[in-house]
Amino acid sequence: MRRLRSGKIRDLVRETSLGVDDLIYPMFVDETTDSSVDISSMPGIQRLPLDKVVDDAKEAADLGIPALVLFGIPKHKDAVGTCSHGEDDIVQQAVRSIKEDLGKDMVVITDVCMCEYTDHGHCGIVDMDTEDVLNDPTLDILGKIATSHVEAGADIVAPSGMMDGMIGAIRNSLDENHFENTPIMSYAAKYTSAFYGPFREAADSGFQFGDRSTYQMDPANSNEAIREAELDILEGADIIMVKPALPYLDIIYRIKNEFKMPTAAYNVSGEYSMLKAAAEKGWLDEKLVMYESLLSIKRAGADMILTYFAKDLARMLK
Ligand code: PBG
Image 1: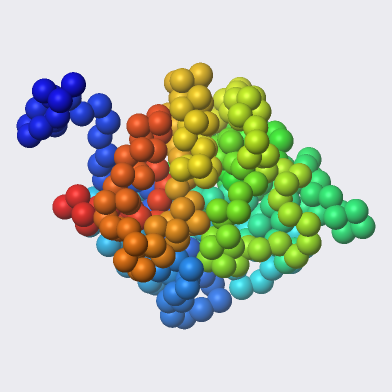
Image 2: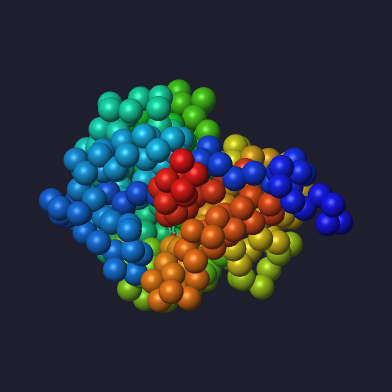
């Protein structure tokens, strides 16, 4: 086996490649601040006011990153996420500004979910007496959020709330509004994961009671991920996502092999923070572990990776 392991021959037999084209850069646009706010648990990542979001998106485009995904932090939160689907709400404004500047040079994806816009922090409408997250009453709002994002100029919508039927509801809403050409990237297999911890600080989307286990998947399950993905594909999903990525490489592998669909993986906040923290302590070589981790996600079957390392990796590859 060692005959093929050195020099240019090693390059010739390489099975997987990782490039800047594979990357999707997550960004947080914050309506509550005029200046950038560091996220302490995610070194290098910030919540940005509108004007700075455009600058950061330009920087990503200059580095050759083809796509970003936007999360919004609104000024006002309430029980029903009123500020999620207005024409001048924060994500809609950010999409318009980025598109005005970058046009076709940046694919703008928007996260479609209620948790950043509700005061209770759950991903749907809640029955306050029982604390149940209500599935069907949430679908209508998700359709409105997605459509408002596309009206503002979003290229792809990415529903992340794990409500049953959300892909079908969003597809219908987009089609009714003549956005039949806009793709949906579904967070199809999204697990109840402790690796989202730092994100909840980033997006100010922690929940006030209960947890997300009535809608996000049990980390113990694998066949269920196949059923989730299958339903989303039948409802009209164009890209299937697995989230988190590194602890779920087996799920990425199974989904890619089962459906042969364009498959995305979300290298989530906790995965980022772990490597950053170990690197800060000098325990790991940051560049090498970043590259190896992202390469492994591709090797497992992902076609694209949502990662907070996007700019770091793009700089490294330059
Ligand atoms: C919102 C959402 C979450 C993430 C992406 N979209 C958080 C959650 O479900 O609690 C997590 C991303 C990350 O940890 O990087 N539904």
